[in-house]
Image (cartoon, rainbow, N blue to C red; front, side, top):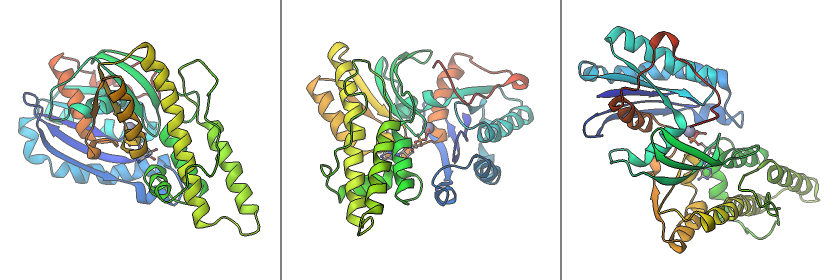
Length: 333
Ligand code: KG4
Ligand code: ZN
């Protein structure tokens, strides 16, 4: 078995995965959403402090498996340096005290392998990764053969939901609440500009849309009646439609030239039902088989890190305990 640790942002999570069967033996996650909600986003130092409390609590429940462990895996990049450090410190201590090898896992590969938790790997595949930190189209041929085809020039898809929620005073994370509000709103009331509509390039940008929403909110706040609850619903619906339309316009361009046989959406924001519906339609049109992670594995978790670690273990891909590196950003997968 492999014990895996995830602490790249605001979720403290540990999993134990069976190397031969991919079975998830144990999995627990303690989220910090409530604690960050008052600030409208993740506060790194607070997140690190909460990991220090949560990770040892979860680890206690895993002690019965210690004698069966063959390796310790941990997310080392990308993420917040102070929170990654907490997971890495625990992983190093465990690896040294239990005399086990250490596996350093890329969080983005983790999101991709969330598709294969308790399952066999299905590659090659084209993947849309939409999370709080990333918006990417990735071509994955194998664990160590992945290419980022398109990425965002500024904010990510999930982050734009977080920022809109913050502007409307709806707390953090923004994705679920903006989606919820959108269900009660008129998506055609506000005509927000679809980013990079005229550009032939396949790339993403969300800062312009975020600013357009900000201007609209200011206008409503300064109006005679102030901003109403219905205005908020309509803002969320119109914003969500535009944010998803941007992704779909770029994906259509990509599908036209490179129709994939297997396609997947992963990452916390892949839980978005509006996006899932549109992706469903494009996959049906191009006869691509659509893969989705189970909803409980879309957001950050250690089960997906453990699933990658199983593949790395089979390739003897271990890290030097003394020189294990954390990275806040990664250029390549
Ligand atoms: O993958 P994840 O848990 O963390 C990162 O690696 O960033 O993704 C979290 C992000 C947050 O920005 C959150 O607002 C967004 O995913 N998210 C959503 C939805 N559920 C979560 N965005 C849009 N619609 C949702 N339903
Ligand atoms: Zn993530």
